[in-house]
Image 1 (tube, rainbow, N blue to C red):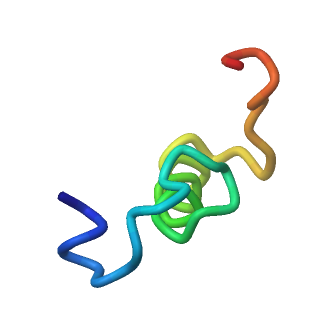
Image 2: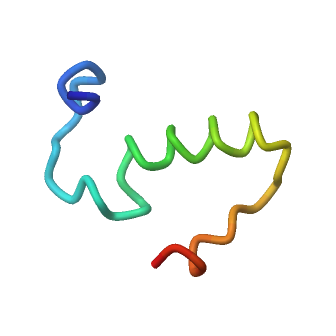
Length: 43
């Protein structure tokens, strides 16, 4: 749904470099007050 709203290609959506994932992480960092998020702990 977010790809449709943002009008971006859903291909590669789960890739951390995808536009939607980048926007999600931007918000996570803002709300958590973290500069870096420990991705490798969740993969």
